[in-house]
Amino acid sequence: MYTCCRYYGLEGLADHAGDTSFSVEVNHFTFGPGCLREAGSHARALGMRRIALYTDKLVRDLPYVATVKRSLEAAGCSVEIYWECEVEPTDRSFKAAAQFAIDGQFDGFVSVGGGSVIDTAKAANLLATYPADLMAYVNAPIGEGRAVPGALKPHIACPTTCGTGSEVTGIAIFDLLSHQCKTGILSRHMLPSRALVDPDVTHTLSPAIIAANGFDALSHALESYTARAHSAKAKSYDGLDGAKRPMNQGANLWSDMGARESLRVIGQNLVRAVNDPSDQQAKGAIMYSALIAGMTFSNAGCHLPHGMSYAVSGLVRDFKPPQGYPQDQPMVPHGMSVVLNAPSVYRFTGDAAPERHLEAAQFLGAETRGANTNDAGEIVAAKLIEMMRAVDFPNGLNAVGYTDADAEQLAERAFPQQRVIKNAPRDVSKATLAELFKGAMRYW
Ligand SMILES: [Fe+2]
Image 1 (cartoon, rainbow, N blue to C red):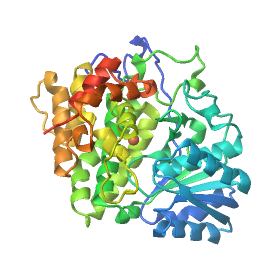
Image 2 (image 1 turned 135 degrees about the horizontal axis):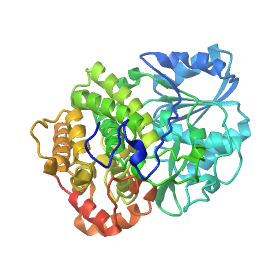
Image 3 (image 1 turned 120 degrees about the vertical axis):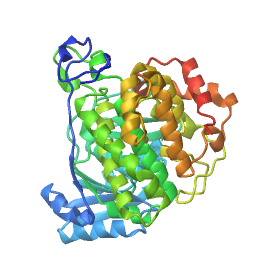
């Protein structure tokens, strides 16, 4: 199948030293225009009667919350709205959202919003279902890393942006204020019970949001495709205790399928979706690819562009995000903080799996016929830069306020993100991270 010896095919899996099996767990999802109106039907099927609906103050005035609420109430459910989810959630905002859930004694959750809202609902559901301090469930070593004990209450996730894929992941990310870092909770029990992915929500997204969201989804797919192969990663569990196989298990045959399709669809549609707001077909395609890429990275795991992004967003000084984002404080939108690192990363990882990098560039639409495998990383980087320029994206980390003098501090902040950093196809030291940040400062 793949000529690169580091990867795998249907033949010869047993030859590898790592985990010879992989697991797939995906949630029920519905995709299509108008499907938010099905919320009541799905709530009834899940036995929900008394529902907490999570949203934020940007989304609450858009039509989607009203559409979902009307559908839930028509199905006989009572609905209480919590609209104080934060765009960059923190441990403080997670705990406030959880208190609402605990006080309300709800039997089901619905989230209508971007990844931050959906993540907040996941955390509130967890803490209301299995009460404990938030840090008990947070990834070790920052938190205790306690396993989520079992199934949560039903949760229907309705994304109103087109990038995070949170509706199909078991991850909830937040800023831990005392440590000034992003961390999170990761459990298959936090996968929403159902996702309603309605491409009509893209009508109200600004071009800048579609660009940042689309690049986030692109990066989920590209990082999954170039992640360390599951068969090259040592087992992190004993013997046959495969129920403990981690969700970020590395690239595998199933995640490759999702990555290929997402990259192909994003390569064909992202620039159109950003530059022509009337192109609803292209915007819907990005919504679909974000869903598929979400399932893909939930299964394979991301690597360096995401691991580095948490430092880029966490150390922001005075960069104000483009139109469509909250303007009350400096912020680098998530998808932007990810993809600004990406060309620098792929120039570094290309040698580890050149065929895979060439294939990925080809899925995105790059011409790779006759390409030399030595140039694989550069070809991926060039394609990403071409797409960034085509949508008038910031030119590297310089453009969001960083200089070479910040590289050490960025590396210091990113290095603890070992869960994703170890998923990269090459080993990475703190010094390497600093070099990668330097390489991401300016691209053209
Ligand atoms: Fe992401």
